[in-house]
Amino acid sequence: MIKEINSTLKVLILKTMLLVFAISVFHFETQAAQKCSNALFDAVPIGALRPEFDHTVRYTKEIPQSRITNQCNLGTCHLYSWSNHLEANYLRRTGKEIRLSADYLSYIHFFASSIAALSRTNKDVKLSLGASSIKSFELIKQYGLRPESSFNIGPEFKAGVPSARANAMIENYIARVQLELSKIQDPTKKQKAFVRRVQELDSLFKEMFGDLPNNFQVEGKTYNARTFTQEFFPELKEKIAVYQVQHRAKEKYQKVQETNTQEVYDIDRRAMDELIISQIDQGKNVYLSYEHKHELVDKPTGIMSIEAFNIPIKMLPLPLNRRQQFKLDDGGHAVQIVGYELNPFTKELVKVKIKNSWGEKNGDAGYFHMYRDYLHTFVKSVVTLP
Image 1 (cartoon, helix red, strand yellow):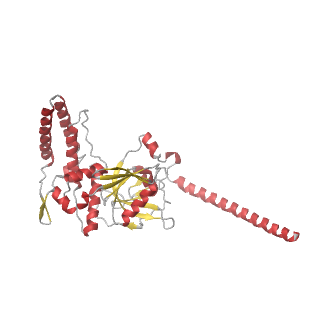
Image 2 (cartoon, rainbow, N blue to C red):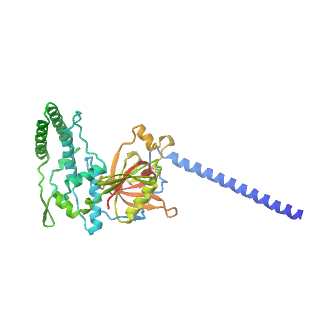
Image 3 (tube, one colour):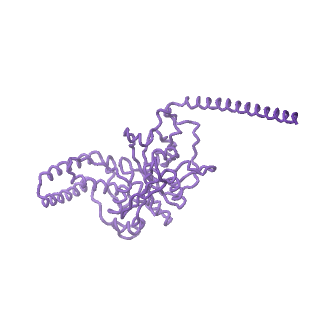
């Protein structure tokens, strides 16, 4: 009996020694491989794209899209994104392409922003064409849409923001009107003066950029912006769902607000991934607002990733709360998510396909490949329509 125990013990000791040896060899080989990998990594200049980064243009699911648009120097990505979203909706619903004029929306936004600036009392005359997804959606509901063929304003409108010369002249005009209105004490007289200046501003816009006819023809029928929108885009009668992505969420999903035009939710990043996948599976684009970081985007390939670039640990992007603390959370941009790729084993999101509005010469023929690390770090919100 003792001999059998000793024999079993010897076998157990021998197996243990072999296991320890195997682990040691594995550890040595792993360290050697890591050193080799580090050597490759260090050979790449800081900030450069890592050649060993595993990038593909493969996607689990993609949605057919209409043409790529180009906002040029207009800072109205939010309006171009909505225009692309609605074009994709129309294509899904009818099987036909339609070309909407995001330039018309930009023109209206510029005009509406100028009117709003006239009534300010804090001597702020600066104009900005940026806006949130909610504000731009409300602008579309208020003023309607036009097809590209009906917007006959000249190309000089897109030559600046919307053109440096026009912008500066209008800001000068706004400053003079603000001074004029500040001297009028009687509320009724002030309101009448304001209405006169709005009419004058309308005339100045027409003189600078040209007149825009109210009516236009589509498929042999006469429309204006409102009737065209009602007939071709009935989904705009519905509410949008705005999902504010929480980087330190306590709950996965929570409704925080509801109005006549929108439902607003707080959502964590994993729930956002599930939402994106669900929408794309239904053939619907997803409106994405995020921080665009040019240093983490490879323009020729369209790769958007943190891990794809050689960046020392202490130079990596800060978490959102720290970016906000040091005012590094800028560079807001709006695009459309039109596809996704899943890891075949874990079923987790690998990357999303982005339709941008910077023309076909940017990225992968106008499209970008946003990897999960970039999306989860810089996302602000996602928006859906029924």
